[in-house]
Amino acid sequence: MFEKRFAAVTPQLLTSDGTNAGKITVLDASLYKVKQSISLQNTAGGARQYQVQRITDINTIYLGPLGSSDIVNERSDVSAYTTALGSFIFAVEQKRTSVPEQEIERLTYEEEPTVARRVVIVDKMGDKIDANNPLPVDATVSVVVPPVTVDIDALTPPTRSDPDNILAVGSDDGTKEAVKRAVRVDSDFDLRTGISDGANKAEVDSFRKLMVRDTGAATILTAIQSVLENDVLEVNDQETQDILTDIFDQLAQGGIIKGTEDGTISGVQRIFVNNIRQQVLASHDRNRTLTWVDPDSKKNRRVTRMEYTSAVVGFTARKDITYTLTAVGDYIVNEEFWSVL
Image 1 (cartoon, one colour):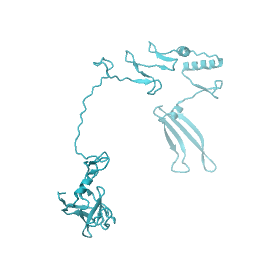
Image 2 (tube, rainbow, N blue to C red):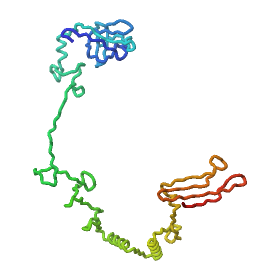
Image 3 (cartoon, rainbow, N blue to C red):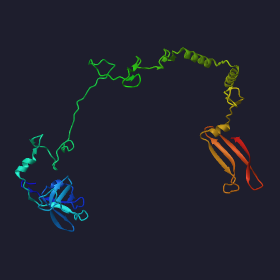
Image 4 (cartoon, rainbow, N blue to C red):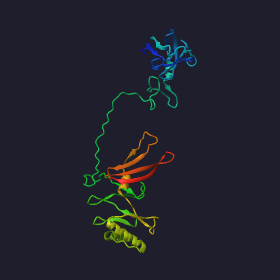
């Protein structure tokens, strides 16, 4: 814009179709001024002139008839200018519209309670610069933070009388409001801690063994230790004592495991069996190979041998199966034979 004239504006394509209420949209409406004469044109015909009646935002312009004095209500039908027809707007250089000096004074006066001539920063759309519409800047900001030394050396006496110390603490009930106590470290740099329910506390004695102050628990632990060291276990029930003695004898001879038929102490005892075949079948790396009579024949599609192998156990458990032909022509399993290879 010049001192007394509006500068020419190069063509801008419409970004949406014009409306019968005089509304058009462009990429930058700030290039135009209210009461400025503009031209609309499309591929269907020549340019036609209109007057800018209002600019509501950076993209929206309302148009009215050229020379209109009612910029609030008068609008022109510009629905013929569509994006499909490549419609565009432009303006030639022209004389600026005159504004009476009295109106200029009125426009810059801020009413009560301000009662002052308005001098504020606005953007190109006339909106005030504030927190919601900040002033655009193009700058590089460099912030230098001076080095800060924090003295947290709690082992060596610091040079200052009020050092910064960081301690690991806990509270009685795990909340910030409860009584706090710091973690303790002894002269050997070992963490001091204890296992306790309040009255009874387990501690480590001078021999690095767990010590319990509960005398009853200490008596039981001592008795268990004696049994383990002497291989002797005595109970008041004679029947149970006989079973325990038999168990100790069996363990001394090689470790045989027994169980009872009904799961009670007085039940009939049976020795647990764990032979090679069961070891192979229970192994985690067990593989099975099947031998068929004739897998392609429906009548003779029978398995005659199953071999289970285990690299961990190192043996193969084989099961051979024999069949009997019935009178109706079917085969049924007759016998199974297990062998270990």
